Length: 175
Ligand SMILES: [Fe+2]
Image (cartoon, helix red, strand yellow):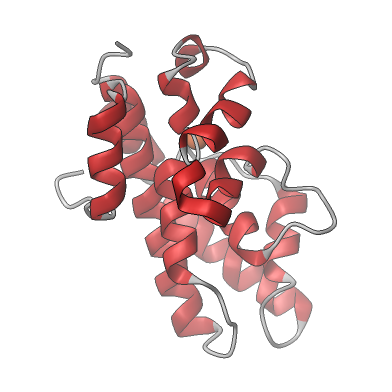
């Protein structure tokens, strides 16, 4: 995990400013890195697909920022961090939506960018969600079954190193 991509500078500064717990910052780095891997794969396999790369990276890097105010949700279930995160990101306008929406990917109007942030937030730890993966595969060109299988291969590749990511994240304290 030495080669994780750095967070966007404005996000790294924000996390320092709000005092994000170390484990949260580690989680956001991991999901951001996986989102970047997915974006690189899409750029190679679906070059015609228009995705706002900066928005996906920002969303991945901030989606759980509300857990700064709800640290109990770092180690347990809960959704209070979603609205709290969106409020913490108000200065970033529409980009705050990822914090509010990352658990609600099954809305019919979820955008490709939102689907990708949620997909990164699942597959980083090896979690596979068939319906979500089908929606993302539906964005890809070509024969649907082939697109699904190609995406499945890439997600399997990422999921294969999930244990390393979990160990990296869990080495950081929650407070
Ligand atoms: Fe997350």
